[in-house]
Image (cartoon, rainbow, N blue to C red; front, side, top):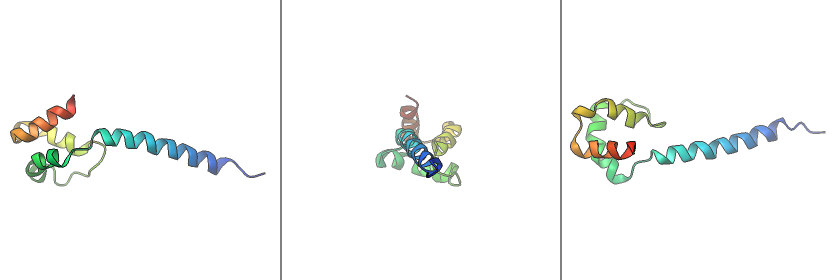
Length: 79
């Protein structure tokens, strides 16, 4: 009788991938939003690894120094 271990792991990973992709999608910025923060990203957060909201968190730490357009993007992400 085959061991169910592999099948169980594969199914669990499949469900995990769906759950994480939904969370990641909520943090995805449109091209217009990315353009609004591009200069600020390059100045303050260029070394930040994308994913998990790390770039948005980095920009948020520099909020007082950001362009108004980028501040609006961050404010919208907080809602």
